[in-house]
Length: 478
Image (cartoon, helix red, strand yellow):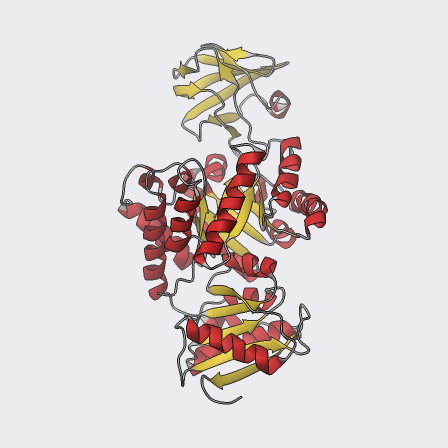
């Protein structure tokens, strides 16, 4: 069954062998996420090698995403590993403290006291613990515990409403970008960007680090800071795609605000011709259980119905008991949700103007395939832009993007409703079109007599050169 929505799976201790990775890819994993918050450069390099080999065995390209840690603001370590905070008691966050105790704990972000004032609310451990700031004295942040609980080593800190000044790219992130480029990452996800400038800086660093390897990765902005919301359009313009990172975002803006923000972000991304990933706790219960909760099924399905390009697994595939089964289950949910989607293609095209020839051809192919009932759209593309534009609109007609560039093939692994395939470089248009049709027929998506819409650029081999649309019946001369 054709599945339009893509699946991103994080790999970790539960999924770092070639055998498990092969099973995950065969189950439906399209993009593998390397979480640079954990592990060493050598760990990531070995895992990347395993991914490439498993993908080779599976007979398809699978993209690699390097997810940077960013300025995750955390408490330090405790003498006894943890403490218990009781509502009503006082507690001090002290950037000068080495080892914490029942009264105070250190900070890994030493400038936090400078960012706070009395009346601020701090949320620790994903919002499970709430502290009210009463005063700031030098290196010390004095607080009163509003909601208590166990606080252990290195738990995260957020300020309600956002507003922390930590830069989006740390020294560790800059080193990790170099590592990511050396192992051939196709995407770089930037944590906690606040504005377009953060993304522009990250892209510049990634392009410089990738130059010796011939890599220009696609840049993904993880939307998880409150101040990123008003700056969203600028961030989108500076990125190739965004991630709806619902964990830290929910802590900063409140859980209740996230569902509407998710819908808004997905809509804005699609309107801006950018891809979008929905992430965090999508199948959380499957870390320990072989089946998801009904709420999780609805969550994944609703993200699909919102129009997300991809849904993402974190701990479920990195540390869970059922990484392969979780991917299979998620894939099945996506397929069922897609069946119920209504296409609003004609409505999408109202009041739209297309100034580029290649974009006009892409939209014409979509419109034609939808109204003629074509079995497939086949796009011969160098950069993948034609496929991206087509994938912003839902038609139930599968899009096959054939390219001679491995980098483009992997990048398109994240585009909704696009199956990216390799086509040997061929400057003869008729030969290339014949090969393209042969690939689609061999995959079982079209058979003799079926109508297929083709797009191609003439002369071939130039990025941005798509200028021709053809309608053919399989098996008939063209």
